[in-house]
Image 1 (cartoon, rainbow, N blue to C red):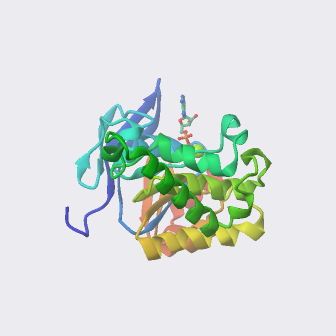
Image 2: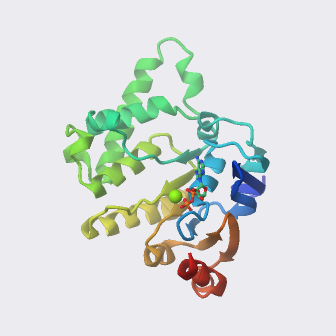
Image 3: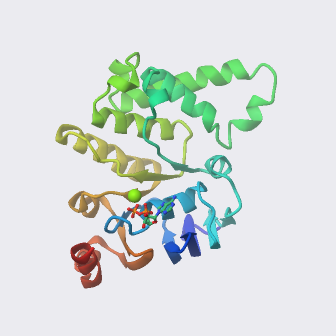
Length: 256
Ligand code: ADP
Ligand code: MG
């Protein structure tokens, strides 16, 4: 794979739910080290496209390619091993666990490419656990959640939860992160903190983000590229300034 080929691609993916075509022959390319925003009115197919990319849904047609490899048939955990992670809201079960244990569990759920061989060798498990604890500590400090490490996740504010979701994903050291509405329910105080961490992870660690977010202004301000969706189709993809002026997309938002 050459450096300038997309890190993640869909080729004519289609997903139907009964008679409804939620994602209709969609081909998109996500460039490495960029933040790509995915926007469109409710029901446009954004979450479905996310699920097709991360492997939580299988397409009726088409293919998904990650780092040049066809991953269409791979389950989410196998895609995670290859560096693609989709964030999830902190479930009820996780709410009853401490922030630190949330982080450690995330690493166990998706050990990642580098870690897996280690786990099969006797005597390395302990060293691995120490390493994960160190990584969790480092990330919690970075996200400014360290003071809350022994707090139950259920007691965190909306914004702190979003930071924890990001932290859990980062435990697996992913190359590509799919974030579904990372700003939802986040207090303005924490919005900038969260956005700064995301742009830093792009700029300093060359991580790739695909972000669905209702707050158009936010998406336009941090994205390198924006994809506009409506009725399961891509209406437009390009620089934020261009997409913002797209008439079809504007109509889609107004007309529903
Ligand atoms: P968005 O995230 O852009 O709001 P979705 O991808 O959630 O859109 O949904 C796209 C369309 O597919 C909607 O019409 C929605 O009702 C439908 N849909 C999504 N998931 C399912 C499902 N599991 N079963 C049936 N219909 C679904
Ligand atoms: Mg959605």
